[in-house]
Image (cartoon, rainbow over all chains, first blue to last red):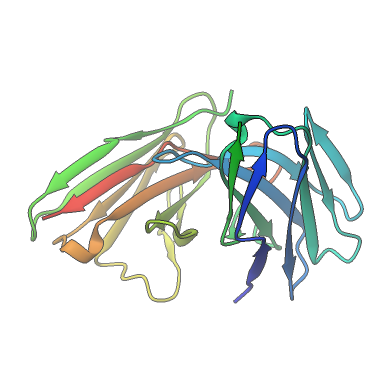
Length: 111
Length: 115
């Protein structure tokens, strides 16, 4: 089946720093999604990408759909303590809505 | 909009009993819902695709007789863990779509503990 490689696995940064994480796949995806999950809760959708090359922002978050359709990155600028959590990328192929998830990036922000 | 709820949020049961988890789309109709399980510090693993009015589609390795899925209406899907065992203890999360794009909105999850 399709697999996503998400990196880094974890990040420890100072408040105010920028963060970058990415996902790569051996398969082509039609949709890339980025989620944030807090402990004991379901994932919350941050950004959805639908076209190769698309660059989309949501506040301090920016994500891009790779031109090859096999990768995506998420940037967080000027991190704050509430950015702490686990970030997941997810890719969708031709089966609408069915997502394959990366292993997550655990972000820790030190005040 | 796009709110998905799950009930219960947390359940503890004895080994051998069955547990039903509900997933509801509160402000939209969902022709398709998905059920995931998540072990501590791991990613979400898709268990099955729940289709309104038809049988669920299970992922490889997921026992359909163990995890019964019913999608009785456009706003409700249920997952029943039958004859639960301690190894079934996990965080079960549903998602719902059907809003035109491929966006999936997740419920808050159900923490199942089997003693």
